[in-house]
Amino acid sequence: MSNELELSLQPDKKPTEARTEEEKQLLQNRLKRIEGQIRGIQKMVGEDRYCVDILIQISAIQAALDKVGFSLLERHTKTCVASSIQEGNGDHHIDELMKVIKQFTK
Image (cartoon, rainbow, N blue to C red; front, side, top):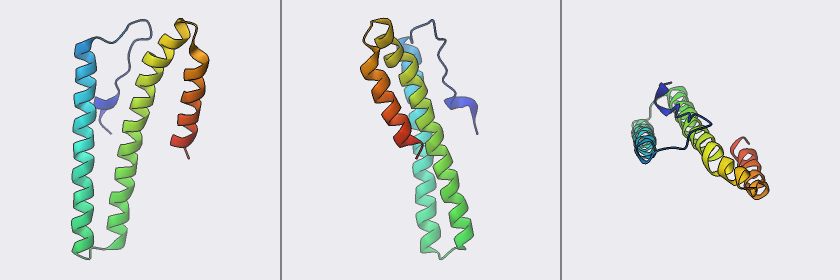
């Protein structure tokens, strides 16, 4: 996988507006590629392509979506959740984060 979605923020630094826009653009670009992969699968189904080939493509899409999701989880944790904890209001955000992680990793 590409390193472009490894959007780690340094824990002691807040994201700049430019960094946020760059992160958004990277995520949007990745989602557009995933959209193209889905269209490719639709075409494969329409052409009665070999089932295993289609399943391999589905697996690739699932992995790509997972990467996008984990990137968003990381960003949310390092920004929203961290800020909330620093302000003394972390319990709600931590509970919310744990629910999302449980749902995301099913």
